[in-house]
Length: 60
Image (cartoon, rainbow, N blue to C red; front, side, top):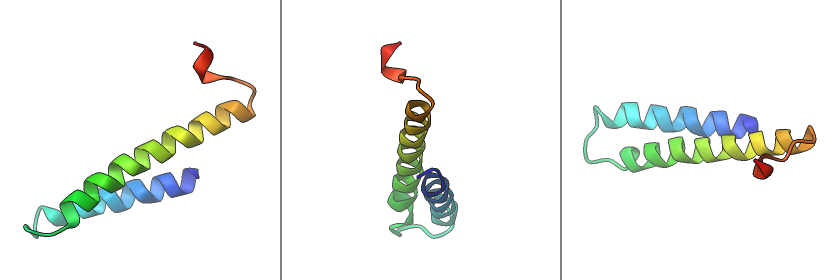
């Protein structure tokens, strides 16, 4: 899941960069979705790693 999060973030960043030069395209919303989706996947993977290490992040 961590690799998918990084890949989604990179694709989102590339879409945002390309949308700056190609107005009127679907790349801007796709870029925002990729960056936000990548961040959410990253958070989920960090929660899974913490849970595997015996730490519960919800107790704090």
